[in-house]
Image 1 (tube, rainbow, N blue to C red):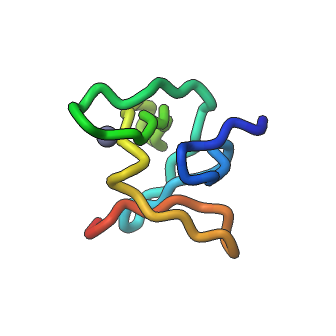
Image 2: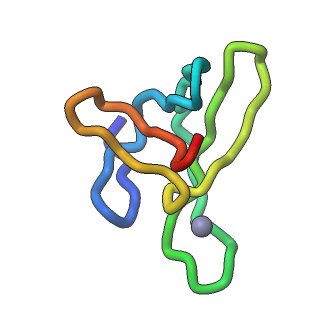
Length: 72
Ligand SMILES: [Zn+2]
């Protein structure tokens, strides 16, 4: 998969939130927040839940190919 967000980050990897690591499941949609140019990344968590955090609320670590939730 080679979907990228508006800052060129690949949207086909993993996301870390504290001790949990979710898997980016590919689908994404432009963020609906007014003035935000991020994308909503669809994430499947170990407990089976699906969330759609905005890429602008995340940081991307290129070394680990993984998103991190800011402040999380
Ligand atoms: Zn947003």
